[in-house]
Amino acid sequence: MDKDFEHSIIMHRTIDKKTFEEDNFKRSNIQNTHIQNCRFEKCDFSRSSLTNLRLTNCIFYGCKFLNVDLSFCKFANCIFKDCDFSLAEIENINFCKGIFSNIQFMSSRITNNIFIETSFTKIDLNGSTTKFNCFEDSVWTNSVFGNCTIDYNISIRSKFIETEMNLETLGSLWGIQEEDMENVCFLSLGRKINEDRKEIYSKYSQYLIKKRLCLEMFTFQVSLKRENIFKRLKELLNSLDERYADGQYLSPDELHYFYEILKAMRKESLLPLLVLKEILIFYKELTCKFSADDHYYETILLFYNNICLIYNSIVHELSSYQYNLLNDESNYQVKLIFKEKPKQDIVQSFNALYQYVYSISSIPNIQFVKDASGSYIVWLIMPLAALAAFNIGTLLLTGGVKHLIKLRASAEVLFSKKLPRKYYLDVYEKDDSEELAKSIISTLLAGKISSIPPTLCNLSSDGINAKNIKDISVEKKQSVLS
Image 1 (cartoon, one colour):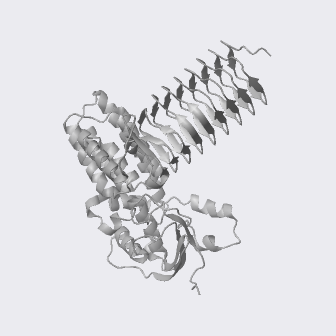
Image 2 (cartoon, helix red, strand yellow):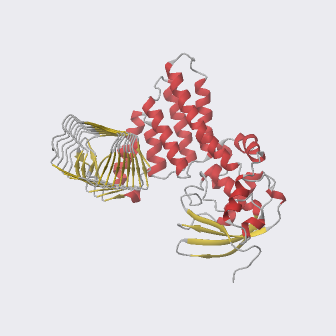
Image 3 (cartoon, one colour):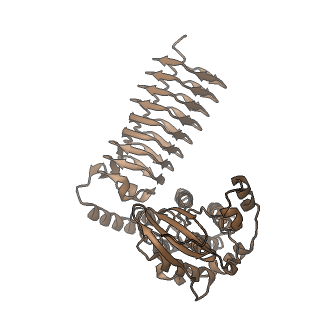
């Protein structure tokens, strides 16, 4: 086959189990093509347009992608080794279970991409723009995540090992935490910062305050430092109010980053509904201050409408509980598995949530049975209403827990081994009562965050939250452990 494909047009094809060595694809237009089980060795794709491709189990070794336009593609189980993506435009790509090793991204533009379970080793982003990307379950090793523009990215369970990183990343990479950074060296203006973490964080915080970078401060405090989200939300809204009053509007990019943060928190079940509600109120009031023919009005209205979708999804989750659970006197033995032992007393937390959700002073009869170490495990005997209050309260205050109990199904469905799983799901999904949703909107969400008891405000940071809870299950009804 002719090795010179320069200026080729390759469209609507399926290429399978082919090997290309030193082939010239310069200035080619490759679109709507499925490529699988192929190997490309020392091929040149410079100045080509690669659009809407589906690549599976492919290997690229020593290939050139100089000044390439790569967009709207999906790569699954693909390996890139010793490749050069300098000056490339890479956007709207899904990379899943990929490997990038010894790759140059110098002066490239990497935006709006998703990297899932992707490994990055010896990566150079020098001079690039890396923006609005999501790194999920991915690992950066021996790389330079710096000397470039890194703005408004999301990190979900991703790690950075033996990597140089721009200091500004701490405020523009939501999701990164201390345990995710192993032997990371911070850079400022291309130079290594030779100070301890505490001093670095202190100076960075002062810089954010001086520049009035309120979203970056929120990211730094809540994501990295895991500070109390209710306290930091109040500071964020105050800062936003001051900025808007001074005419320093959040840019469309900043609003988009804010939305991506809320999406990521919702995905990880770490977005308290009461926090989202306060943000909605703030922007609802803000829209009234702009004329409908103001261009910025359309910008904030789009942001408001987008976060309304997140809000509605959480309310829908809340509506899965019956509102008349207080009338159910049945006791259940509940097993809770935490990744780490919560700082707060669990029974006291259940009681506080019960009183908060049902707006009553009485407390349920909760019996502590025993606990076990390892992943911290605790068994409690309690009424179904107390368990529902725990689920509802944590969703309001911490963003949710992992519910394995469908509380609206009957006891027979919950515990009978004779009924098939399909019937269990059908019974749950077809029950569409709206009583609880209406009650929450009219009662629970009517209060201000300032009225929440301090013990409940601290649930997220004290370990009773979705990230720390591995499992909730009901074992035997009305039983006692030995």
